[in-house]
Length: 293
Image 1 (cartoon, one colour):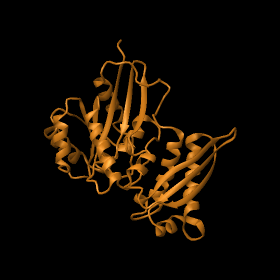
Image 2 (tube, one colour):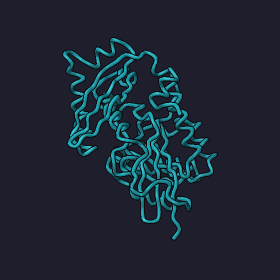
Image 3 (cartoon, one colour):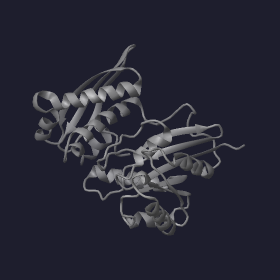
Image 4 (cartoon, one colour):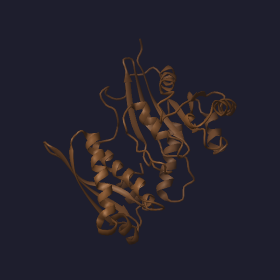
């Protein structure tokens, strides 16, 4: 039997559950997940294998109208994902307005690759509404295979996988069969810290922060990790650190615990906070931080 392999790119609006779906499909927490929009900033690959197939899933930032250069880069990643997919996994849900982002629906209908359209979050809806959404999307994107699912409850995941495998092109594996992502441990360390910032701070703070791993040393018994949290203003630095350092300590403690679970090794984590007022707009800084490609 011929081997099949392909790139399956996941796109959709913010907060429809793309990252939760990616993690459920891959069986690992590769993408950070919070209730805040714009949680995902990078394209993150998750790779799963069967005996005669390989799927390279790619989680992407949510579709948005960019305000600053970082967001422009995020939108570019979405556009690239729609253009270079072997199969496109478009995620909507039972909450958002079905007619949101008509421009991207038009783009879906211009694609020549197979489309699997997932209606997520059916666990918080009812059967009649889900049925109506299936009918709506079948008319909006006639070529798509429509699958209702709940990424959170892991319902419909097998249906999605089967639909994707059936549509994979004949090709050798793109990655070693033991590989499960294209990102390294430093990347996941920075994303875990950023997730805690998204969870523990309000308003503009999470969107003004970038995490850079300054040092990453693997010892026999533990990882020693030094990270810098960049903010845009001195007032934000004070908020991130908190009175007596309590807020930063909470971020560090929770991030360390999750790293130890993810890395399966003890972690010593040191966090510093620095001000860089232009990091979201400065092309050189964005390239340094791995955003612009």
